[in-house]
Amino acid sequence: MAKIFCVANQKGGVGKTTTAVNLSAGLAQLKQRVLLVDLDPQGNATMGAGINKAELTASIYEVLLGMSDVREALKTSETGKFDVLPANRELAGAEVEMVELENREKRLKDALAAVSDDYDFILIDCPPALSMLTLNGLCAAHGVIIPMQCEYYALEGLSDLVNTIKKVHAKLNTELKIIGLLRVMFDPRMTLSQQVSAQLEQHFGEKVFKTIIPRNVRLAEAPSYGMPGVSFDPSSKGAQAYIAFGAEMVARIKTW
Image 1 (tube, rainbow, N blue to C red):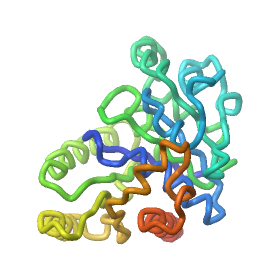
Image 2 (cartoon, rainbow, N blue to C red):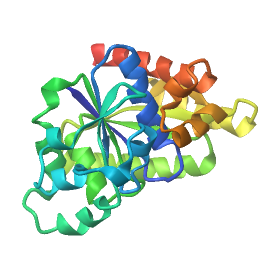
Image 3 (cartoon, rainbow, N blue to C red):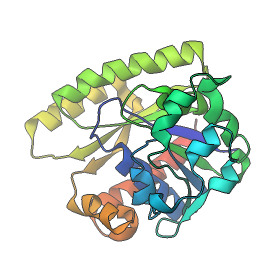
């Protein structure tokens, strides 16, 4: 049975999609069976995996509303070697349409149950807001991976996210826990980055992943080619960091 993880942060622009796509590719290189679920109406994870969101005949939108099952909507990332449950702009309408549905917070959990045995990891790329879509991701997951930049405003947003996770754990999903904090877009030349990083380690201890993802141009360029950075330039520091992060995730799951 797959371990299901949300990549979530209520703050935008912190590298959630970059992390979801490259961790998926990194895990695939480590011979893990991976499904990436794109839960963001922007569909950036879909495009970053090399799948044209404009040509989808079925997507996560149809899955959440019960018009299609997961297997009908699945696509394979040829460049990343993992499966994708893709998204496009239609998903924005699901927010409104799901309000009147039964069990609306657990539609994704119920849908993924059908394919859980086919994968080792299922990663969910959540939108940057606490919405019905994010709530579905948190209810379906065993744990949350929080990518964050080492800057002051990131710490402010982190406390809000931790409180949200606690509420979901208490009321909707007692399995949910924080797996770890991933420091991304890290620039060691900045004193503030070093200070915030030290604060995180002091406050969260082992919840902070040892792997640090550096600020890297090649990771930023990769989506325009429809490729994960891990496949686009395997020798880049960013790609190497995400492969190391994949290995750390596999090791952490064994002791989990």
